Length: 191
Ligand SMILES: [Zn+2]
Image 1 (cartoon, rainbow, N blue to C red):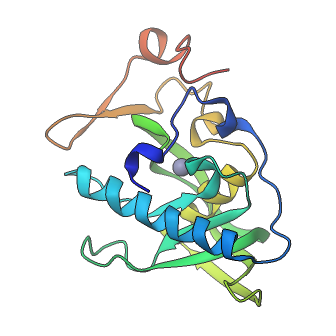
Image 2 (image 1 turned 180 degrees about the vertical axis):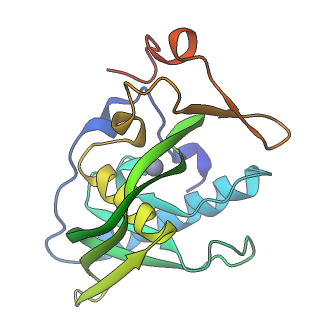
């Protein structure tokens, strides 16, 4: 799989709930491999961005599966951890705003409020349950990705916020978008 297999808005499946994985079959393991391949392919095509995580719905496979890059500060580290049936068991800390982008929402960034700490429970590729306590940017990634498994996108959290939307320009800088002309009635973004 490549970056061309990543679905983007206005694809309607991005707003559907994914189903829980029952048995971890070879098909499920293949989906996880496909997710890694698609993220790496996307990453190689973008100069100023890093593909840090992906949910299975983003390659149009509607299962509750998320992959997160093990070392997203290093563009040369292409290892990931898979989280099958991930759920947030507790949100803690404070709520902070920071920039988020998404492989399925092209060239758009948003300032999204998220909890600074999240406790997560998931299954690994052998079907064993494990738990993670995430803080800071990693807590944000989990909230963004688990939203995907529920059919929710980062823009849905900020849809009425006039100063929250940005575009990544060719030189790698974020510039604020005009809410009235670029966002409010944008048929690609809103169903
Ligand atoms: Zn996303």
